[in-house]
Image (tube, rainbow, N blue to C red):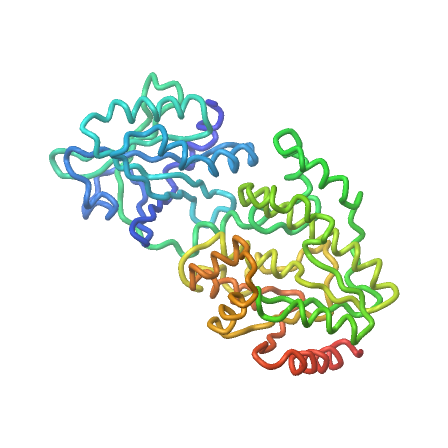
Length: 417
């Protein structure tokens, strides 16, 4: 365990820390000299009898880190005194890819913090976490952070805390590439291979994968992808296009992965996103085979995988997304590209009415869309920012036949069908 701290400490001083507090993010940084101004806002309501701590999950083993973080909140709620309040916390080195660490900020209001510290010490010794304690100076009220050493025989150097501005980009953006969104078959494959010992179903999925990826930029016949949120009429349209064009109809994720979707939906984002990324490559192989003899219609593809993952990785308004033109929107270099991507859009209230009339259980992501208007807006905007090929938006509020005719005109104009 000592190695993980040794590798992290040289850049500790450069880190920015963010605490999610009452819907806002409060940020602070470290410096060696006492600050001249106010303390970070996260400490504004801390009384003289309360103690503050933080835990950040840190491990070179990405699978271990993802699995541990997914269960950390429950572990803290079970082990800490009930007077402890938890807030989500992150730490990152500005502009440094893969530097994001996730964890929790703890405010302990119990009368005796000894129980809290014993529990945190146990975590520090046995689990992939870094623990910090925070103290306020009696003379000037300045706050300091102390990173606990792993052997607990001594403590590392104290740093003073200074408020800092909102980061230039959302910190989660630093870890999106090949963690939330995968940009090659091999990167996603590596994650699932590492899961074989802890997720038996991963072996079954691996057996379905192609032995390698034959990178074809285009199929022989046109490939049209239909995207859109649930209840926008996507299923009706894909089936109508299949019949009208004499096309093959494929799905992403492919139906062969259906037996394992519920299992992987329970996993942390790193593993879940790798599973769905590999589904795109299975679909691409099917497209290549069918596209030799007829047009191909695809019900969702990489746009969905990427848009939902990006919108989930960040929080807040659309402005939190990676900027337009960012590399996170680039199409994977080894994934077959469609000729046309159509995104069906619908007024939110009409889409809600259609969902209700369906009488079907909503997916986890559909529930998130319903709860969080900003999440829906981030998904819709992420769709539009993906490069290679871009999306063409079609209003799905008309009759099913009218939408079909509109899309057929698009296909004729862009795909020569």
